[in-house]
Image 1 (cartoon, rainbow, N blue to C red):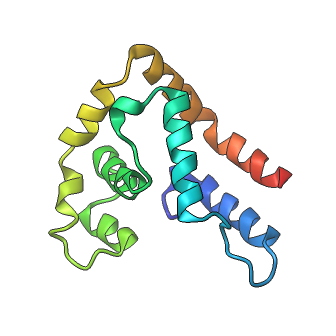
Image 2: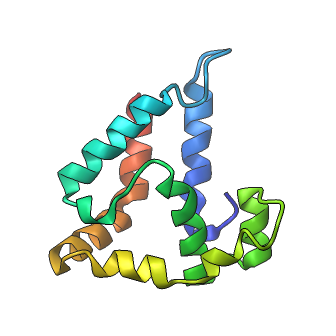
Amino acid sequence: VGIAARGFVREALEVVYRKRRRGERLVPVSLADYGSRVAESVSRLGFEALRIVPHSFRHTGPSTDAWTGALDTVGIQRRGMWSSELSVRRYSKHAMLLRQLALLTRAQKARMRTRAATFPKRLLHALSAI
């Protein structure tokens, strides 16, 4: 977790960990179910042009960390458990991230900013209700 702006992630993981039953997976969702949920969300949000798939999230965090300066290349490598710095360098190139953002409409960008601002509170509320 480790990034101050994402402190809510630690809190969310603690809630999930406390609520799981002994021997139960931390997140009891299959890869197929996760893929279906991602596809449904992409469609509902109108983000089809971004071609988001489950594996996209493996790259979004490191790209965002590099773009915002939240982590340097070594920090990104450590967090992502990549053995080679070479495999991490692509995240310091922001062209792909900027191309993706350029595909969004002004309304989608505004909605995305609003949702991002309220996401931590909504996530913690949803987890508490489980």
